[in-house]
Image 1 (tube, rainbow, N blue to C red):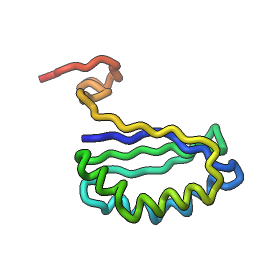
Image 2: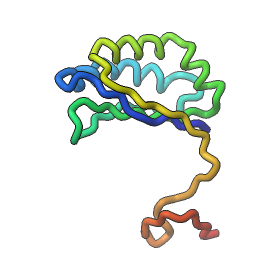
Image 3: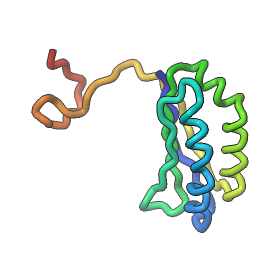
Image 4: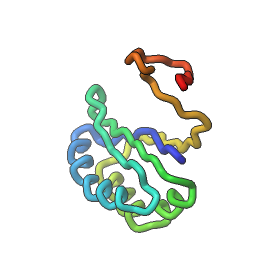
Length: 114
């Protein structure tokens, strides 16, 4: 599994329009083979910021998306709303664990209740 996370800052007066314009990209990308999650989300405290969250089955799925038409269209859409900054990273998680244990207590450590 691969995670892609980060943010894009656009013209603050155009952020909400960018999110609306991005909806078709989100819908089409979510239907792309190997896409598990694909979300653009507004930062409610920063009027310019859009957070990016993607989850892909594997690197081949992500590579296919990056070479495909939806990615190119997404870049054009964001650019039309005045990119002011961007920081997006990909991760390959080595570990996965629940945040809440069986008693509903949030924990920062990795635990095994088996």
